[in-house]
Image (cartoon, rainbow, N blue to C red; front, top):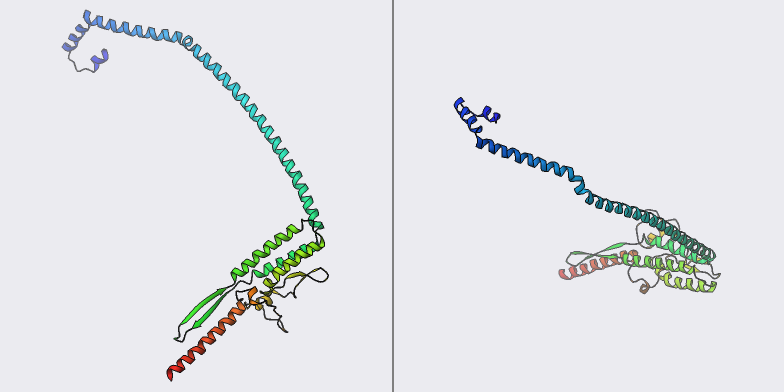
Length: 294
C-alpha cells in the first residue's frame, strides 16, 4: 500500500482521505478475509507437501517393479543374444569347414583328372586358342566405289566382322568342350574321334582366313594342318595392311576352301572384286560415251 502512495500523484488531502478509508471497519474486514484466504492456501500447500511422498509411494513402487522386470528381461535378452551369436559363429565355422573339405576334395579330384587326361586335349585346345587370338586381328571393312556412265560415284561397304565374331565364339565353345572332355573317362580312341570331329568342323572355317587348324597326324599326335606363319603374313594373306615388309622368297601358300564354306568375301577378295567392278564400270562408261559421239 505504501508503494501505491509513493507512486501516486496525490496531494496531502487525498492521501489523508484514503488513509481514513483504509482504516475503516469495512476495509479492514476485507483485508482480513484476504489474509485468511492466503493463509488457508498456504496451509493446504504445506499439507500436500507433507503427504506428497505418501501419496506417490504406491505408484513409484509399482513403476519400480516394472523397471526391475524390464532390466531383468533386457539382461536375459542380451544373454540370449550373446548365446545366439556364439551358436551362429559355431555353425558358420562348421559350414566353412565342411565347404573347405568339399572344395579340397573337389580340387584334388579335378587335379588328378586333369593330370591324367590325354595330353592331346590340352595341345589341341592351346592351338585353337592361338587361332582365336589371330582372328582378333582379321576383322575388316572394305569400301567399294562404283561410277556410273553419268560420272556419279556410289560407295558400298562390306565387312567380315560377323563371320569373325561367330568363328571366335565357336572356338570358345570348342575349348569349353575340350576342358569337359579332360574330365571324362575317355579312351584314347574316343579322344581321337572327338578331336578329329573338331578338325572337320574348324579346318574349312579357319583356312578360309588363311589360318591352320589343329589335327591329328598319322601317329595320332596333334599338329597343324599347314605350316604356321607369322601374323604379318596372315594379315597379307587376308588382304589386310601390315607395317612389316614381306619376307624374301616366295609368298606363303594360302589354302582356301570353296566359297560355300565361307560365303562372305575376305578383305583380299573384296578389294580385288571392288577393283574389278570399278574397271568394268569405267569400260562401260567409255562405250556409252563412244556410242553417243557416233
